[in-house]
Image (cartoon, rainbow, N blue to C red; front, top):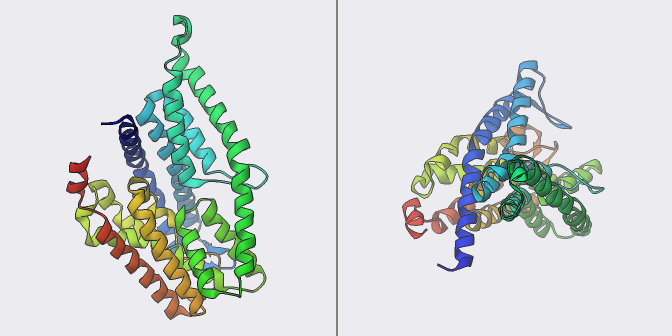
Length: 351
């Protein structure tokens, strides 16, 4: 086996390790959020939770989701480099999921995965340093975590975040030029942007664009976006339900949490599936969300609140097409997954 194939195999194993350790946080956070938000009412600022107990439950769910990305990144680094990789990986994963810089950029799960891999390999290099015996004992708990976190953190903040910020601003300008001129194209782009990084900067750019238009009394693009946010987790849940042989036992356990997250418009419910099989899952959910967004724009769907999923149906103009657009988008994603994902036994035998 070539060196490149060995590296790719190690990275795939690291992704699987990160997903495995992340899954409990997804389940806990997703279920608590689903229960809490289901008790709320759609308002101008999204779902409004008035019950104090449900607010506390919502806070627990938010914390679970906040921990999800650092756990993913930390244990990717751990798989590649052992214990010294955990802390840098987690800190940098948290950084990737936190707005930084003048543009308040965050790169979400994609950035966290990249930083997790970078942390792992940088830690491995640090472990090859020839140092005195007295220093060697503090390398894994002091020198390596500080060095790796500082080097990659500063590189991310000063080199990576800036161009991403410029790109996101350009996307907003581009979307603004499309608004009103091509409903179908705008819906396709918003839907695809919503699914491509599931809560990352591209998703957040679509959100910011639709919120900007809502302030101007234009609700159509927000309708497309709020249809699209629900499609990835719903599609993954339905795919798990009907094609169980294509998913591991851990992934099958995520079916119901993903379904509930889809109902309340939490796109992040699809992240564990995408992290484990990006080349098949991402195209499927991007295409489904793009089609759903385009159908919503074509048929004049308007969502009057900044939240998505079927839970906001009372605050939607064009309820039938809101539902149908979401249903068709989910069905397309599920069909793509059905024909592209092999049974898990086949996947295992090819590794």
